[in-house]
Length: 300
Image (cartoon, rainbow, N blue to C red; front, side):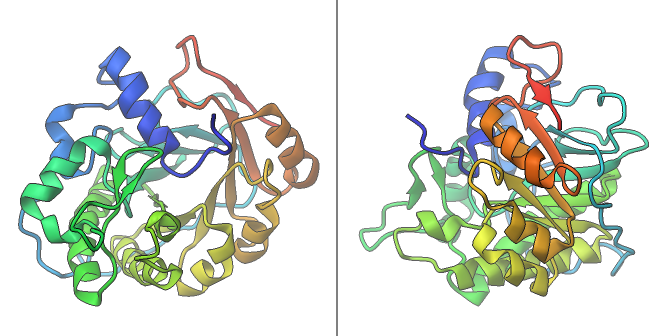
């Protein structure tokens, strides 16, 4: 049983469940692109050799943060026409932005998707976290190998790889990037700390801002104030209504918070306290596109 929807669930469900069944371009899945970050990360593959630079293309650009409380939809499991009134949408980086809206580009930044592990082992084996026996440290719930962000040199190299994906979001026309798994240290068997995640997050912030993108902290309510201080512009919070965490994000980010709930009770709680201030949406666990049988979406 699932005690809680954790960071990475949507990726796991989309790549293992939705994509395995549908295998459609709309879902944005392709095993042939596992080398660039996973089944749902389908922008052109990052080169196998990437330098340590964290500078984006063309130098620093103008960053536009989202407005607080805008109507929002979460579409990382497959793009579809946004419902009427929606002004902001988050989509996988393989998908095109929605015309006329504030578009957030989903990127897995702290862990490798299951079908990307082999590519990382072949091209950057030392950038995957390993225990004392040399075994990969894996988020066992979702079968995702953790990136080794334990040293400045490794963080710089990883920022080079992930930075290519962030630059791709900017070139595609997105206004922001959603950086998933800021709390990877919680699944590292004690090999990583919150400071490691924050240090890597700082490099991602610099890369996004250099590309002209706002960047959102994904989950890790306990790091909200720290995340804001190092430059994150907004937050994407899963089930903060369900687990009474929305306030931490709201206070840190001046209500620039996108809340995704997966249970009716969580939506009720989020709407009762935060519906007039934050962007709140209920989605199905698979976050499938509209028109699919499992699709579910509600707002306050």
